[in-house]
Length: 155
Length: 452
View 1: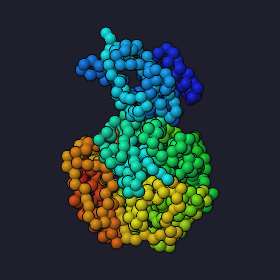
View 2 (view 1 turned 180 degrees about the vertical axis):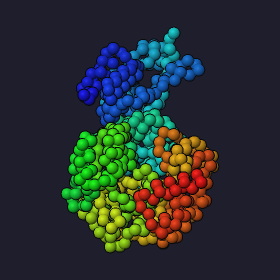
View 3 (view 1 turned 90 degrees about the vertical axis):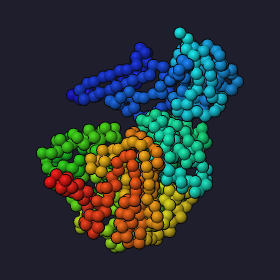
View 4 (view 1 turned 90 degrees about the horizontal axis):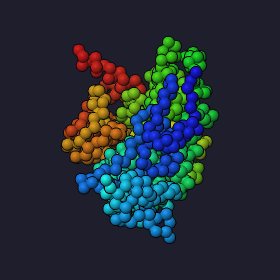
């Protein structure tokens, strides 16, 4: 008998990964091999990727690469843009910004929104700390890997 | 009217498209992966946007990032080049829904011709001769064996979603079928995510000859004379020329008309190529259609004196095709694909170009994104430059190409220039006496020679 798995089951596994906060899942039945990885601190960028074939998450290749937020020598933690789009500091023009320079931010706190293909993607803080720098002005375009924020982590 | 084009590609073809757009007064946007930050296309475009890491699935194949890059730069059109997203029907569909002009054929045409077996059956209906083979996708070994028995060995297995020579296997006898079928299925699955295969009779001593198609949105379609692409290694084209030394005027008219009628019958629009196999008795068979600009398009431009990309851009903005119905070719043109690879082992040779002199002079065209000091990233294909020669006769074109390649100097990486010089001085090649087996035989003889 051939091992079979359909799209719905893959989605279930992905949901399970999120629910349990797992970062990697591997399944091997006969000639079928599935490996799903997720970056624990990644934003909801999956939502804007309907055009990316399932192969990119369900392929038997290595885990998807991601932007490595680098820490510099002064101990600053940089948040970089995981996608191309337009940078917004608030949920809509009439509301205040998510964060201001000098404020304390919590881990997983929303820092900004990047609009890509009419979808709003919330970008969250990967670490807790003081927001040292905001590199982009509201409403400006950002490219992949561009520095958005610097956070001084709290120990 | 198109005012700004985002070029969703890299390397020489991105630069080729940027050049023509600039000539037309159209602004350009380059997109690049982190591995291509210092690539030439990013420097000659008016703007450039990083769209992801080196891995192609997250950059050059990342539709959301490419569409977003077009939106933040306000580009109103996207040119896909060749490879990457050029033949993905989802891409023009998404461009449409975002009000971006896709410079290429419609999603429905890409769909129609993209499934290689469906295209074959469709073209059979459009009265193009096709190679005898399976009518459906082959799944079981018993099926494969019974079809092969009916059409006669040798046969070739091909990936239904294939292209670029991958997922193809020649089977010469029934006892090879089991092994070759599973390898071909595996290759097709790995390369295209679809293990579907179809089967054709394998024609020995054939030529690979292709016809350029171009059609506008108002239903005017014409076909241009042939590109001879038989010099191949592992189904990868190495050297192309036009006209084919194997073809006479009568045959040319016949094959052009057949391709034109077929393209007309499906309402082909934008640039496309119909590939044919031509056997010893000058019977031609439709193989597949490519719904994009071909790598080897410059040789057609050289003998017809046209700019195919310019025409493609004009067609995409709704203009009529400006070529007359009886456009004639003049002279002879050859293209050598200079790859960054070992000329003997064919292993790709990435690295830094320490010194570079590209050829020039009358009748020589070089399409390349290489420059002195550039480090070739290991993440992409090895095509480094296309050297194209044009002269009044085939003999002069060969001499011109030999001189050009002898004067090409590339230090720091290995290239296949020695292989090209060997081909160009081969007596059979000089006589125009070659088939798709030429390079394979030539290389195996060379190995025997170097061993003794």
